[in-house]
Image (tube, rainbow, N blue to C red):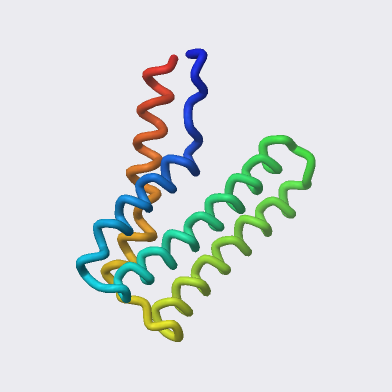
Length: 117
């Protein structure tokens, strides 16, 4: 591993989310707010998913409990998306961009890890 530490997936996601939010400014504050809301939902989702996976791999928690935690995370993610698009009235296109910003971040993170090894 290089002497410089590789930024985490969360940091790369934050960078891409900031770029996307800056790019949404010409489309108005509703688009910016919708994108930021979806990005925030994905930040929380990623943190909970990472914690659940660490528990599953570590074997500190029984398998049914781990599966329940992952299932509850998925239910909460769905509820947050439905509430954002329905009750909060987020702009659908900007919201989807915010949710999907994790995909290029994961690819970037994976590519940088592959180069490292």
